[in-house]
Length: 566
Image 1 (cartoon, rainbow, N blue to C red):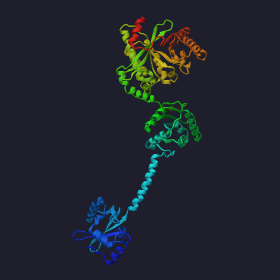
Image 2: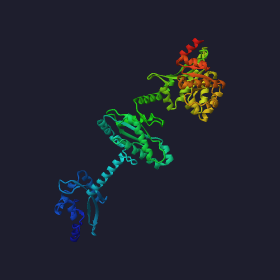
Image 3: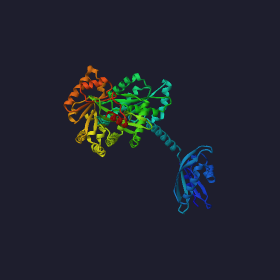
């Protein structure tokens, strides 16, 4: 059996490090052969008491959750099946003291006679663990600050707003009786970065953050994402214009080059309204500004949500609406000014929804335009018009030419002309019965590919009509650049005939004369008064359309009207 000489024992026992030497007797019991002064100090026990404790109740000081693991490791180590390097919890002081983390490493001592003993060195890891815990706490504190702070601007970030925005909102209600959510966007951020560089772009964002903090000293100002900032603060409608001017002036003063400033959507908070819902509504208000750089703020209205919900409904039910003919053409007769008889008609899309009820074009056209569905709508209306014309002809009933509206978006499809002609030919409709109507604005902005398509339509024998002439900044060039057969004066011209010393009277008179000399027909829409009709007769405008004569009507009513005229 392994034994220590007197000199060896003396050396080991006087060591300041905590160690113990163990041997195994013939009954395979672990016996503590020697412990160091450092071990006694470590456990704060006398050598005699500690040796007795280790021999009689070795695991009594070990944490119950660690005892089994430590015993198993000891058996494997004794069999030389594994090393001994372990961290566990040990009661090192008195019986009621707290557990400390202890790191123990074991090695084998061998004598020349082949006997061996295990020497275990103990290290108190509690100070190391405590130090690590302090480091972790400091890191977690930094991480928490980082999690809640935008590094570039130093402002609170979106995480902070989500965590504490509701509290700020409640505080505003307690102190001022109300609050608002503000959603700011930097105008032209991408263009600014491209022109001045990303570093200048960063300085612009910092300038915006500074300007907003200055403008809302008692508010919660956060950088949300990218070039978006959100604010919780009171709202005073009579002061907002001056406030926006102040913010944009400070931003421009603090940055390089020219900045387009910021704009914002504002939503008035309701009591107990979740802050993220408030800011989402403010964001919706911002979107309502669109691309109008002359507007710097917009106050959110619940009507916007209703519009968005309706738009979602329309888009998701569009296919069903076509298949089940919820969408159908209504016909508004066009009158020959001199004879008073129906000469033509315009097909206008109407959506009669089983859930939403009758919908006006202003309700569904913008939604379909946003999702590029006008192409399908307009071709569908053309198809329904051709179907109706075919029925009239087959029944021997009177029929008049019908105009169908097409938008610039339709011309983004290269096969538009082919699809139009395919539909018309499929129903055997003569080209003389179809008019293709395009707005003046769409024509004035027409790219070369659209011009070629318009010319191709005319070559196939379809009459081209220019709609809404005079609604914007009309250019006479379109009359020479495009082969239009008719121009339709916008109804605003008739509504304001006597404005500006009767300027519209002279303009319509002159344009009618010019069109007549160019072989272009003229039509006035929005005719509602007898005085309007007399004026059109005086200037020899050929056609008229409006509520003075007829409102848009279903196909069966239009058929009856034509039969009665005959």
